[in-house]
Amino acid sequence: MDDRKIQIFMDSLLPLLKAGVAYTVPLTLISFALGLVLAILTALARLSKISVLKAAAGFYVWIIRGTPLLVQLFIIFYGLPSVGITLDPFIAAIIGFTLSVGAYGSEIVRAAIQSIPAGQWEAADSIGMTRTQALRRIIMPQAARVSVPPLANSFISLVKDTSLAASITYVEMFRKAQEITATTYEPLLLYSEVALIYLLFCTVLSALQHYLERRLARFSAR
Amino acid sequence: MIEVRNLHKSFGDLEVLKGIELSLDKGKVLVIIGPSGSGKSTLLRCFNLLEMPDEGQLKIGELALNFDKGRRPGTREVLALRKRTGMVFQSYNLFPHMTALENVMEAQVTVQKKSKEAARSRALELLDKVGLADKAGNYPHQLSGGQQQRVGIARAMAADPEVLLFDEPTSALDPELVGEVLKVMKRLASEGMTMVVVTHEMKFAADVADQIIMVDQGVIIEQGSPAEVLQHPNHPRAAAFLNILTQREI
Ligand SMILES: Nc1ncnc2c1ncn2[C@@H]1O[C@H](COP(=O)(O)OP(=O)(O)OP(=O)(O)O)[C@@H](O)[C@H]1O
Ligand SMILES: [Mg+2]
Image (cartoon, rainbow over all chains, first blue to last red):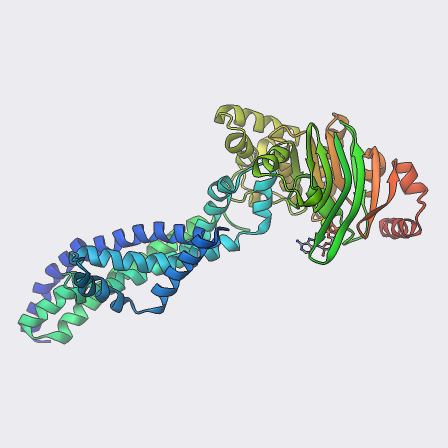
């Protein structure tokens, strides 16, 4: 590496990190939080006895899982204006990623709820709980623990997937790298640099995931 | 206290209970015995509607339910019945994310809407009764099987039920842990708790039961005092079943 490249690398580091912290991280956190709520509601709808709810939730998961995320983002950002709905790139990205986390997350939450032994429902029934009470007090707290490892994986995937928002003009970390490349003509350097920062973020998150899983294991050694 | 008339229950094409009739007075202990698959658990689970009978009448305390002509109790009646009963499961089914104390508090706080303090003091009293006052803060996985089952008994009693239902409460336990659970059950019986117990523990049945029924293929083939049923069975299959049990015990 020559001095010029080292200089470009150093000069880009701060803008990239800034874009990461100011744009990639909020997009990830907000989409994940909203997506999680949607995932839980969808999972409950799919497990409910009300067939309309069940069908609606199943339809939603089918659509989202069966189409590429990038295409969904294009429909939301470039497609919707032709029916009069024009969205800010940030909002469009939030909607796209929330829908995605909601659909994939609902499968995780549903599997977790179904993995709780029938005896737990029966014990809750036997002490006179309603279905809602049983879910809230007995089933969901246990399902939450079961869901942590797969949801943590989804979260880490989401961090990387947010780079797709670059394609709908949202200037997060990857788009920032593209912009710097456009002026410096160093694609290999800049894209490797941004890859390194993603790697750093994900490594920190993996460590957190391990810590969380170890803590949870203390209560559920069964 | 318990009245059962002409109770029927099928799973698909399989008729598991074929017209069960029985009654039990307050403060008495009924033991249900019978071969595997005869319908003992199903019958017991009909008492708190974990299984919904297809036909017949069921009365627990003042609450009478009629299942004839496809009638089904509404949610409110189901919950009312469950508040009158407590159940102890073969595999304990404690809530693994709660301590022993929290397990016993749960029904009081969530179902009975008691204050935390009131629930806690009642739960501690019950844990003391089953000999586990010092284990209140332990999670289920930190307890032995016998201890878990005693927490299960305390949990079942927490909401002051009129009847306690036991489904083979000692079958999952190592032999050396069976005694501590039976001792607690004996004590409850002597204190006047109304109990229905499915068990293969013949000594317990002989000592504690006021009434024994033997179920076989969904019908009651023997019914009476322990002496009548255990020593002088009338039905040939009852005699054969008791033979197997006694041989196993020797
Ligand atoms: N939910 C269910 N669905 C279908 N069949 C069932 C169900 N529950 C029980 N059965 C069947 O009903 C019959 C009676 O079962 P039950 O559990 O009441 O027997 P049991 O007398 O308690 O036997 P065990 O001593 O083995 O516990 C068995 O043939 C069993 O396979
Ligand atoms: Mg059984």
